[in-house]
Length: 151
Picture 1 (spheres, rainbow, N blue to C red):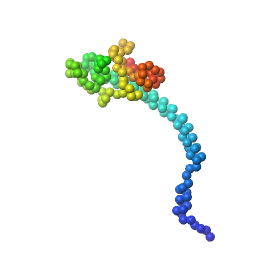
Picture 2 (spheres, rainbow, N blue to C red):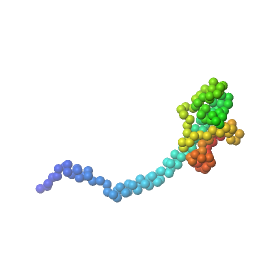
Picture 3 (spheres, helix red, strand yellow):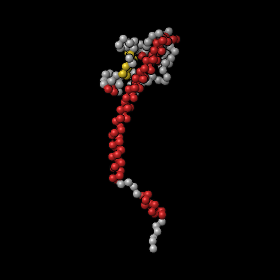
Picture 4 (tube, one colour):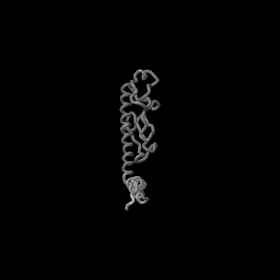
């Protein structure tokens, strides 16, 4: 004669079984290997996309300054800087000629959360130059820390 166990007891034992320590370690090793192989490639793309974003924003700001210069007839002074893209000048007749704001929203920061730098007169014979100091936020550097210019 067979003794039958109630199904609830059998199901409870099956549900109570978990993973062994070896199975957990194998899964962790696989995850570690995948992170080691894929992580650097993904992070490298993020860095290069920040450089591309900065270049695009520099072009956008340069265009906005060009449009503002057409309205005002002059470039912003070093003192006025990029703020003139979003705020009207205080002195006349520039105040009446200003048709801004020339950018949507607030003045953007570079992808590394540093303000863009407006230099007037510009470099290489240009009337002005816009700069991002790169990832380190300091003048000079190489690679991701290299300065980006609007020229």
